[in-house]
Image (cartoon, rainbow, N blue to C red; front, side, top):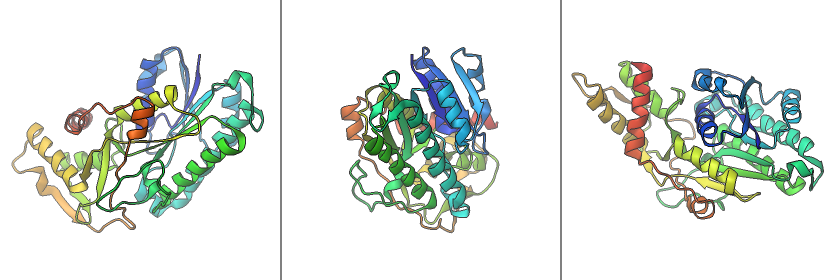
Amino acid sequence: MKKVLVTGGAGFIGANFLQYITKEYSDYVIINIDNLTYASDFTNIQDLEKLGNYQFLKVDICDEKSVSKIIKTNEIDTIIHFAAESHVDNSIENPYIFAETNIMGTLNLLQAAYKEWFSKPFEIKEKYRNSRFIHVSTDEVYGTLEDKGYFTEESNYMPNSPYSASKAASDLLVRSYFHTYGMNVITTNCSNNFGPFQNKEKLIPKIIFNALNDLVIPIYGDGSNVRDWLHVSDHCAAISAILQNGEVGETYLIGDNNEKTNLQIVHAICDVLDRKVPKEVSYRNQIQFVADRAGHDYRYAIDSSKVQREVGWKPRMTFEKALEHTIDWYLQKIL
């Protein structure tokens, strides 16, 4: 029986993953720790409280003593690490909290796991022989692309924002625990996620919220920046597959080959809302171009052939179906 620690499980991707894993693996013991910051929403996971194999603890991953106690007391053998500060705009305004949470928080988890799982470097305790530390990261660590090409697992790290720099540092710490201590780590770097539970500061929920509340729909620059979009349910399935079949010490890039400009995303949402919640004029009339974000990366695109080939995962939801599903969820929440 696996004893799984999920960090950041009240956040967007973490909450979706908990909903997924508790249904997929009812025999796992699952402990969810989250500091319940502004970006968390306990209601997204409240229904899990009734499960006998699930427990929530309000804990900050920067609290070294609490993290160590939880891992040791519960004999945690699997860590799936989602907890992170993740909004680029916020990292520009206050980079310190990004360094503290994303770097030092990750280090606390790694060191606590090492102390519990190992007697010394490369000497793992027998009961933790099949332990796993899955570190969930972002494609933003690789910087930006021009019109052609894709990020791969061999791409150089070239982060361009305090957020992506802090995630790059955490990735390298995870890598170091594999090479220095022999820890069973795996890192995933994923493209832009969307779906239920996402905080309204992020692009897609922000567009929906502003549109429905007759607010300006802001677009940075000319809206030509490109992202590869993946529905969060496909991301959760990928992490699950990597947990079962991923190779220790490896990195896997997760994406959908689904590139859209920001302007295309905004237009697609407005068009769906025009159909579902029509008003006298199109929601496109609320679009307003605003000053571009400082250091705004132009394009992200992922080659996910490695994870598909070696782990057996592939995305299932089309962008159109996933977007409609997402909008329907927010309509129920907002209206």
